[in-house]
Image (cartoon, rainbow over all chains, first blue to last red; front, side):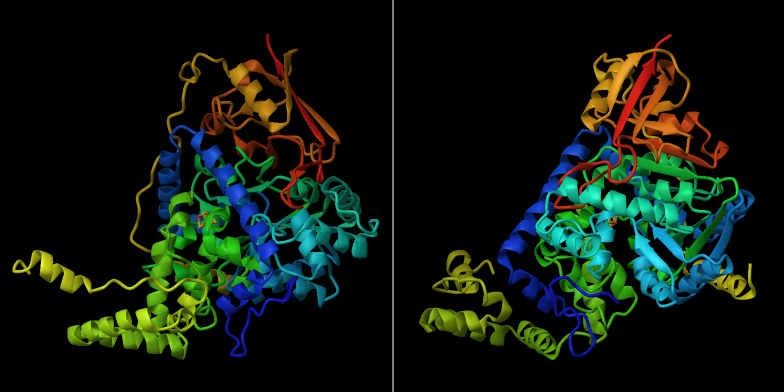
Amino acid sequence: MTQRSFELPVVGASGRVDHPAAAAAFNADVARTEWHDASLWFVREKRDRAASTVPGWEELRARASAIKEHALTHLDEYLVQFEANATRNGMQVHWARDADEHNRIVHGILSAQGASRLVKSKSMLTEECGLNPYLEARGIEVVDTDLGERIVQLRGEGPSHIVMPAIHLRKEEVGDTFHDHLGTPAGLAEPNALAAAAREHLRQRFLAADCTLTGINFAIAETGGFVVCTNEGNADLGMALAPIHIASVGIEKIIPRVEDLGVFLRLLARSATGQAVTAYSTHVHGPREGQALHVVLVDNGRTRQLAREEFWRSLKCIRCGACMNTCPIYRRSGGHSYGSTVPGPIGSVLTPGLDLDRYATLPFASTLCGSCTAVCPVMIDLDTQLFRWRQRVVENGHVSLAKRASIDGATRVLDRPRLFRLLGAVARIGLRILPAPLARRAAGVWGRTREAPVPPPQSFRAWYRRHRGGAA
Amino acid sequence: MSAPERSARDAILAAVREARPPAVARVEAPIASPTPAGNGGISRTDAFNAAGIAAGADVTVCARGDVARIVDAALGGARSVLSFSDVTPFAARVVVVVNEEDLVDDLHAAYARIDVRAHPFGAFVAGPSKTADIEQSLVIGAHGPKALSIVVGRA
Ligand code: SF4
């Protein structure tokens, strides 16, 4: 669907996403990897400072989690309630089972009105649905207006992060892109100047647009309204100008009541960027005078995830991106290496649910350190879910032959105490006599960047016998 | 709604009903907030002022006005203004006038006081338009207002 800035071998010959290969390619540029890692850690630290200033932060997280669990376990009721109230507010509500239905609905709305110039604010759902290429192939001009989204759109890439879409790019690269597409002077790389050029370029698109499309952060069942959060105010600008407004939303974004917003808005921006709240938290409860307002409710695999006893809680996600910023794997492999619209820990839990074979490497893109779970504002047990997906991957035979063989081998050894002891002795001798490079080779991937350990003179079992002998 | 969309609707709702995990009970949303006294005796206005300065908005306490309500002014909390005017996204500079008695401690208190349904459009505005999409450098005025001033009216 989209290309990558520095071609990563994301999809292997088998048509499967090969996260390790893509991560290795990203890591080949050491300077970029270190800078990427540091940029995200900086955001993680801002999040920590923001969270620590809020009395009752943990209580807020617990409430947010409980509200979402309540909403998801009564989702049919709240969807129907939202639909009725939104309709009463003058919105037209549409339902789409999958990406294709979503794209056809959006295109249908545009073509019925003869609209051909669409400005979008950030919507990961439309990325997930591949809306831009779908509309472009049908003659619609699509302009992403979030600065980061616009940068990657001009480069023909997808976002590498759900909150900071261009976090993988240096300012010089943005300068080159703007020079090519917006005619900024060659070599201009100062962020203020680049943003000013984008502001002018996008202002014209806003004024010319005959339709705007936004995402939705929270859809409120009780009132039939919704909330869109941005820092740039680009969603507001689009909504205020265009005669048609389409808002696309995943069905899991429904919350029961207005008062729930107090909890979520206090958590969202602090978790995302360390700000107290986004610059614009916009509540929409109906079309402007003369405007047509459409809401498209999209399933696209969400009901399947809801049906999975082990994974339905992943649908609590409010897309803050905190789990990405803190993840040691994400920070050092870049968002594109996941081959999934939503990368990082939550992406590795959600996307395998769409196609386990294709995304089988993603649950392994984790150290299982649990840092994601610790920061998640809605308390999703991400590391546990990643671990469970690994089990499903192995059970369903989606692992490589080499991994399969080593798992089987390990099972056989661990099942046989005698064999285990024998191999332990062999390894202790081997480690002592083998030259270091050979010993590291024998350790496989693990040994590639590590020194082989110094072998102990005896096994733990022998040591135990000697010192605690008789007790055993 | 078209026939295919109606069948999509019915299929999605049926799938949700089928999938529904065991019910989790409803919880109250607002959590107890520190009262102004709990803020170490700092008034809401002072707390708001301090938070506003940190956010890049200039806050002035002076003449009375009646444009918007200011929320989430708990010390260390967010500072933002609820604006029901949809011209705010265009202006280069926005000035909002608020009554001091409309200052509340946090978003929970704000939602308890306002009726978001009453207007088709209402935004909590917490500062000028901004972005950090280029190398995490903060740029003010990505699209909308380049400056936000808040005037707190005191009777
Ligand atoms: S899983 Fe949690 S931390 Fe990750 S994006 Fe979603 S809400 Fe944020």
